[in-house]
Amino acid sequence: MSVYHPPKISSNEITPQRVYLSRRTFIGGAAAGLVLSGTAVSASAAPLQAKPGSYKLDEKLTPKEAVTTYNNFYEFGVNKSDPAQNSGDFKPTPWAVAVEGLVNKPKTFGLEELMKIQLEERTYRMRCVEGWSMVIPWIGFPLKALLDQVEPQGSAKYVAFETVVRPSEMPGQSGFFQPLSWPYIEGLRLDEAAHPLTILAVGLYGETLPNQNGAPIRLVVPWKYGFKSIKSVVKIKLVEKQPETTWKNANAKEYGFYSNVNPAVDHPRWSQATEQRIGEGSGLFPDRRPTLPFNGYADEVASLYAGMDLKANY
Amino acid sequence: MPSFAALPRRLHGPSVRALYFLGLLPAAWYLYQAMTGGLGFNPVKGLEHLLGIWALRFLIVALFVTPLRDLTGINWLRYRRALGLLGFYYVLFHFTVYVVLDLRLDIHAVWADIVRRPYITIGMACLILLLPLAATSNGWSIRRLGPRWNTLHKLSYLILAGAVLHFVLARKSLTLEPAVYIAIAAVLLSYRIVRKPVLRWKRPKRQNQPVRQT
Image (cartoon, rainbow over all chains, first blue to last red; front, side):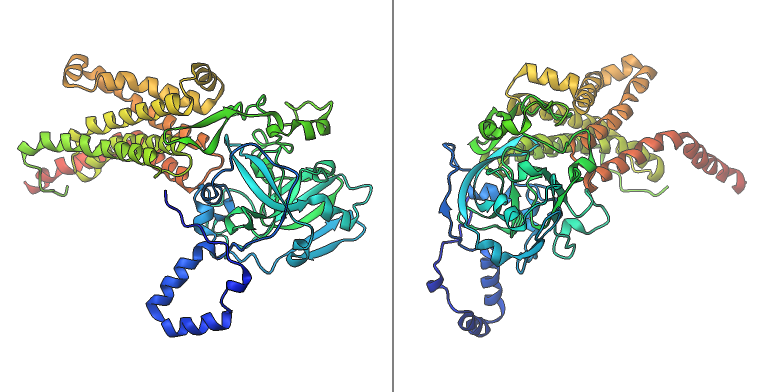
């Protein structure tokens, strides 16, 4: 399939807005429409600088087209192609994330401020609860870097996250038939949130996050099923009790609070023993491989759950 | 009852054959798309789901023939066998893709799915229930079974209910699409409950007309 790759352009090559606006006026009408539709593909992504991170994988990266056109983001629709198709009106800037609750220094961070935290590139596996997986080069920073700035209090045991609610920009949030209740909410135990693997991502494949992947800032917790990695985050709250989470509220028998990737604990309606690696294999014979405990991050995170019954705490 | 231009008798056979041909086109098209990248980054799941949806559609249209004839006089009875069999063929395609392409002939995994996952148990039961119906979808069986043929083929109501349930349970959440199928199936199945009174209500009127004229 031929897909348009937006070229990487350095800032000195970009025509000043004043100049191109005057050109557009000159070209006018139909031609302007063509220019606009042509640029729409890359409108939400801009090049992003990051230092190479410490987490790399020997596995082949999932093609960028797959990462940006095949995913779940119910705020834009329930089909895998909906997020890419329906997120054009979403405005990821300006943006702010409120960090509050049981902290000494609650604060609302502007996106620019968050982007100043040392960004690094990290290649993580992403395992969807539906039985497919990807390998994605994220750009972001450890969530702990943000938590440290607000100083969690001793009573804080959990971290609750919340996605933005904007029905006018997110078609999945409007209409009479809503598959989930909004805002989308997620949560982690504080030690999970502070784990060095847990990051807030602001980019992927060397660019800022496309709208469909959770622009401008999202959580990435690579050892948990993908739905835990909440997108387009506006609120992070430190709390004492285990917070509610969207999918657990929707169906507690099928989606637990922990939702650690675990090939030994099946989803009630399908096996989690294997996964289909998106973009690998060919046509009718895609790649299907065994799913790894904690999505392959057992060495780093298994100790967080020492002594816990992972079948009961799914 | 409204009258519709009847299809000339000589075209009856060809029109049924055309329906089989047209009915199999979606399967061929999706198979081609799956092989050439047209079904996106998860072509096997895409193919599996599309074949399942088309199976459901044919079963629905097959069960639409009777109410359509009762209520409007449009008679598609000659197409009902083709519609039902197309539904059955799509169920077979759907099952084949699931076993061969999705689970890679891992019979152990197939069996585990069937016994442990209710929506797959239901889907499998529907496939098995369809076998006697498909096997008796011929003139010889109809003559041979007589009134028992009608009784046997009432299984199609159970199969449609099961197929919709299978579809709805396979989804992560209830969205508009499965809700529409639930509604259509509910209307078609509840029509069978009210069918006798409806026909009784329609029939006397017709019989009364000549009485009033005399």
